Image 1: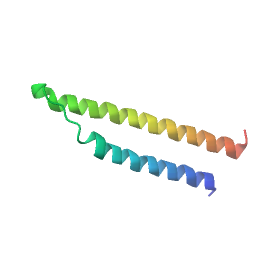
Image 2: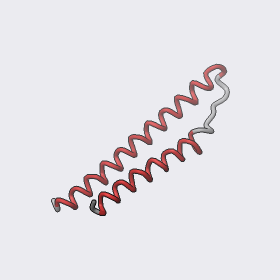
Image 3: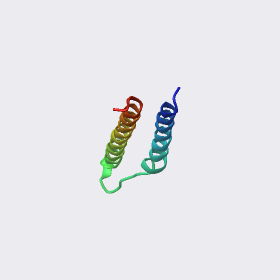
Length: 76
């Protein structure tokens, strides 16, 4: 395997670990109060939206990295 592929795999695993850390350390403790019975629903909605945004950012980063690696390999 070529070093650039190892770099892509390392970046992928690093993003997975960082994403998990963000989910546990930052998103986990988020709580909302003052809305009565809707507290848990609003907090869950905020967590879900932030998690989806992080997933989209991770996909964009990996896509850019993949394109950069393939352009470098093909010398396009």
